[in-house]
Each structure stands twice: as structure tokens, then as C-alpha cells.
Image (cartoon, rainbow, N blue to C red; front, side, top):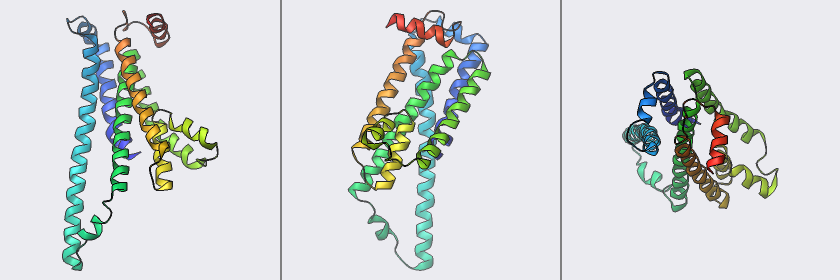
Length: 232
């Protein structure tokens, strides 16, 4: 929740606002008329969002690392106990694997949310609709977390578990919750990460197809879906 709310949502907000403002100021229309690939415009927006997310995460992780190392050094001086050997005992293959799983899943969820923001910004007619999308994206992880904690994760059986793990964004949060409860990474965790990757690719593909529709700035989402079906 912390990573999604403070590192992914702000770049999404900037992307949505930038594109909707371009639409209102008529600069997006002139951009689409330039002799460049429309897919390049989508890729540029995606790259912009990913750079913002990566920059936020790197700066925060570096700051957190410095604070932790400084805190341990201070405790070593005060308590005269070397805490570093104690910490290194937690650096095991299983813990490294779990950390890799978490970082991979968060990366794919970030890509998915940013690509969804680009897609929705192409359909949002003004800044009000863009802000509505931002509100929905901010509420979704919180609602998902409440449902995951409130409902026993194994109540629906193995099929139900894999179904929930395959859902975009919610699926990764669900698999992460199960991983924390069980203390290990199972097939469900890998399945969820793969599902997030597939949804990310589909969202990027959808956005690239969406921007190629003639008159995309004048049609609504229903009309856009009908045209995409015809193109498909």
C-alpha cells in the first residue's frame, strides 16, 4: 500500500494531468499531427512515468539504507554489541528470493498502473475525468487490502486462490499476503507475477492501438472499444 500510494500514484497523477491538459490546450492534437509514430508518444509517456517511479524508489531506498546503517552503527557504539553479524544471518537464499519476488511484482504492477493511466488519459475528456480516474486507482489498493484481510484466503479452494492471484494489481497484493502468511514462495506467487506481466503487456498494447484510432480526441470509451473490435 505504501509503495503504491506514494511512489506509483503520484506519477500516474502527473501523466493523467499532463495529457488531459494537453487535450484542453489543443497541444495534444498538434502532437499527433507531427511526423512521428503515435506508438512513440505512448512509449514516451510510459517511460516518463517509469522514470519518476524508479527515481522515487531509488532515492527512498538509498535514504533508508543510510538511516539503517547509521542507526546500527550508533547502537553498536552505545550497546557495545556488533549487530552486523546478527543481521547477516537473515541474508539467506529464501529471503533474497522473496525480496526479488516482491520487487519484480511491484515493478510489474507499477508498469501496469502507469500504462492504464496512459490509456485512460487518452479517453478522459477533461481534467475532471482524469481526477476521477486517479481517485479510483487510489481507492482500489485500499479496498483490495481490506477484502484480502477480511476474507480467509483459502475459503475458495485452490481454484479460487489462483483466480484471485490472476487479477490485475489485486492479484499481486493477494499473492503477497499469502506469501507473508506461509513464509515461503509457492507456485501461486510466481503465477501472480506472470499474470501481472501479461496484464502489463496487454495494457501497453491496448494503449498503442488506442492512440492509432482516427479521431481519438473526439470519441468516448464506448466508441473507442467498438473501433478497436473492428480493427481486431
